[in-house]
Length: 410
Image (cartoon, rainbow, N blue to C red; front, top):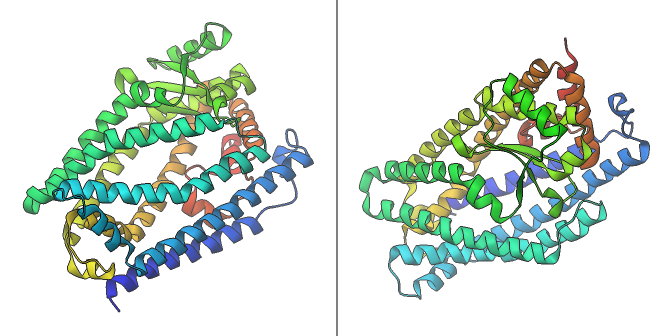
């Protein structure tokens, strides 16, 4: 059997088994006894509901991953990629046009297969637990907008990558990296004002006690606020969230309207201080720099496997092409991607602790951030006792109990 095929199938199956074992271990780690830290805000019924939510979403994820893994393996073994290639070549376009069609067919197929799971997750599971506010119309419009953005942004970027590898010779990987980094920086810059408003309404924080308190805190921290906005998160879900986005004059701190509704002014300031801490401690720039470094590694390794006939034989391909090389390389890169994801998560969790410490020191009110974290946990039905291995591999944020414990340290 083709060694590339053996490796790819092994990666897929080992990855699936590993995820399955960790998911089951995570379910077994659910503690039926409410942690003492939360006895002041969680009642037994609400805590039982949060654990039921974790069991339901985990079981659904296992079913989804099982179906995805089975379909992927079968598709590879029956020569599905070769069939797609023949379909794309039937349009009679050049290598770049054919490549775009090939990738579009793959994305379309993946979207169609994933659609029933997305619908069930949104309109059955999230609805059952009182989270869903998405209407069918919003769901459909979101999907159309996402497809449009993929075509408008993703299409030209993919065409650029294909062109570089077709014409760039041995330095094509470097040209691709420079081009993609440039596009990424532009998107990071304009996303808050051009892309994100396509999906949500952003409203400047209204005049009043909250805005006055937030502005006073920011001035005390010598933080120039380019914009503090509320976002109509309630349009799709009742969950609470806040985030920092953009650079320079497009920089924004965004609160979900659900968060503004549920949290007190002091708690919101504590959340703001946490988000501000990420900026002050340069976490955003550090992670962006790490992503750019990861990207150059990816493109360099990719260049080694472009038009590798052994790899194409593994997928039963009749023709060798740049565009199919990109897809097939993704299977080979999967273990490296997983390792890098774990490393990124380690640094991300460390950054969360640092931002928490910044919020504690700058506000002098650790209790307010603790209170906000508790309200976020109870409203979002968070798992309070995740398995350590699950946290290590998959969590970008530390478990809430660890964050609270760190905040209470003198």
